[in-house]
Structure formats: structure tokens, C-alpha cells
Length: 350
Image 1: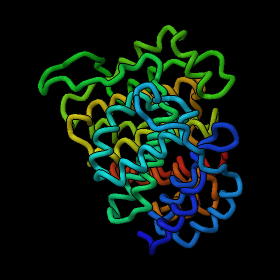
Image 2: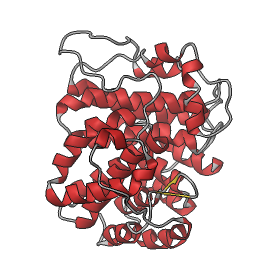
Image 3: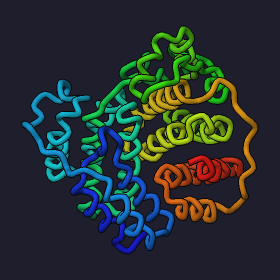
């Protein structure tokens, strides 16, 4: 995958905070992992040299995390969360930490405009490739800490939905992924950042029913298939709606991608709740940023997956790189050439 380049990049980044310029997410760890993953090692440090100039220092802790529930979603405790996970990952195997904290953090999947879960997904993929790297364990700890500090539920989503027993319908809707996405409403007031926009969702009459419309997974296998379809359909939707908010609508694709990448390291009992949470994230981002009506898919130069990612790497914007990384996964899973165009479209728009 790389020749130590990713670990070097992580070491440079781990002196910086999870946010900068207010509450913009630090995309550095996610972007360098994607670049290294796809063989663009030579571009990692050059990209990072420019990006590091924008970042803030690592926040200092105030006091130990004694009551984790009370500290969830408190950005002032970011330094405390960083220290907490650094200590935990020194004392216990990383999969144990992930298994303990995933169900605690999952209900707050909107954290940092979904960047908490996205950063965790990249960190898990990096660790899966090299479990001996202390820098990758540190990255997982910093990713989990960011998610915890910015923990934020999607309005109207259950805190941790359970999978119905195999063979039983359980509670929930009956719509497939495509129909559920097509049925999402839009907020009327499209001003402000994501926190303000998410706060308007409870006032949308159709929101809760549309959020509940997706058919719940009855088995882990159904959950995995549902997540793969969610990534696929969200990638196609970017071609229709990306013009409305080119940057923010990237997260409708990358958030479920991160969850899908993490599934193999989780207890299968968590797969169905993970699909439900990923759906809530994609649904919320779509409802608050997508236009009411889509447009015809744009003309984008065709290319192989390697060519598509190389163009994204040359473009250099972190969202373009991360979307290219996600749609390459979707293409590998489905063979649908259309999803590759989403990365090129993002490069045109951003």
C-alpha cells in the first residue's frame, strides 16, 4: 500500500487538532489515507505540506473522562477525549476498543457533519492493512475522540435500533434504498451550517415518516447489502443533486462508505443498527442540502478507476479525493460505471 509514507503523514498530523478555523474538520488523516491506499504515495507529503498550514494545534485536556455519557458531544472536552482514547488504545486491542465504543458513538453519527464516523472508517481500513503500526492505532484513537467530542444524533432517529429477529418483519418501513431516498423531503430554509439545518428537520412534516420508511435489515447479510446499495444510490444521487451543495453532499456518500468499511471488524449484531444509522446520516444530509429537483447527469470524461482517482489526486481538494475513494469502492462492488462520474463531477464543481 505504501512504504511507510502513511505512518509518516500520520505522525505529522497527530500534532494537530481535529478541527480548525472554528469547527471545520481536519480532513488531513482521511485524505492521506486515501492517497496512500490508491498508490499515490509520492503526493502524500506534498499535499500535506500545504494543508498543514491551515491547521490548529492539538487541544489540551481539562480533566479525565470519568462519566463518558455526560462528556459525549462536548467539544470543550476534545482534549480529554484524545487523552482517554490514547490511554485505552495503549492498554487494550484496537478491535476491543472499537467494539466497545461503536454502539456508544453510532447514535451520534451526525458528529462534525459526519466526519467523526468518516475518519474512523479510514482509520480502521488503515489498521486492517497494518495492525502493527502504532501510528495507525493513534489515528484510530484520535478519530474516535473527535466523534465523541462532537457526538450529535440525527433528529428523529432512534438512539440504537435493533435488528428484528431473523424471518420477522419487525418495526420500520418497507421501502428499498432507492425508494426511500426518492421519498426524502427537503427543508425550506436552506441557510446556515449543518447544525442549524439539522435543527430544522423536526419542523418538516414528512421527515420522521420518510426517515422510518427504509426497510430494516433482518440479518447481518441484509445489512451489508443494504449499506452497499446505500453507497451506490447515494453516489448516483450526487450526479443529480451535487450542484446544490457540492461539498456537503459528498458526505451523503462518504458517511455510509465509512460504516460499510468498518462492518468486518464489528460484531454481526451491530450490522443492522449500523445500516440504520448510516441511512439516517445520508437521509439527513440529503434533506438539508439537496435541491428539491434533480438535474440531468452531467457529461464527465470517462476513465478507469485508476484514472478517476488520479484525476482527483491532481485536483487536490480533500472532498474530491475522498469522494473518488468512495465511488471506487462502489464501482468495485457493483460494476456500475456511472458512479465513477461522481468524482469527476465533484472536481468540476469544487
